Length: 308
Image (tube, rainbow, N blue to C red):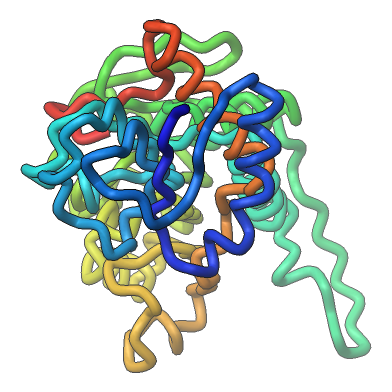
């Protein structure tokens, strides 16, 4: 019997229990899944970083902690979490992110906000073709790659940037400090999908925002700290950035007195770009437990030195 502890908020248990049990059965796992195991008996922890479990010291036989979240910045520094940690790379989450990003890129590309009229106005404004609209995706992990490839399929010339070197068919890839400058220069739409680490904080700041062509648009479904908020507000006020669609913030929910709410060139969405999907995430969890029991390498293992 494999003892699996579910460590997340009660509402997660309500939506995740049945899919997990079904995925375990499909994978042939004889697993005892529940939220109330004795820590000393636990083999695997299915985990959400906002759960009450923060001290992993009693979990002496735990083989791995399997996160339900794509981001692990809230737990990667936990000194008591010494066992392997796997982040969630969920096909359903990826599909949701691709749809959200593609929708907002097309919204900007087609200038939908300004061309849908609610009054009697006839002002034809024909957008360029996608091939004339350079898009840059910052972050080429699973989500960034999937979004970049979809946008390239639609005909956009897509440039990607990551901290380490990547090679992706159909995407012009850059890396490193000089590569970031190159990736931002000429980008009319920028999508941020980097992880939140000390090395990525304020990737967009006064200096990097100035590299963009005047009036560029920003889309951030990645992490709030990727953007220097004061620098972005200044760029919006000057017209250097034409509009920003922001789904993530340093403080969530976004405080009601934050300038983003009232800014005419900011669209706020409440962290809805992508969500872990219970059925597909359960299959990822089950596969990792199967791998752990078979002595095979775990999927999506977090590199503690990099923070993701």
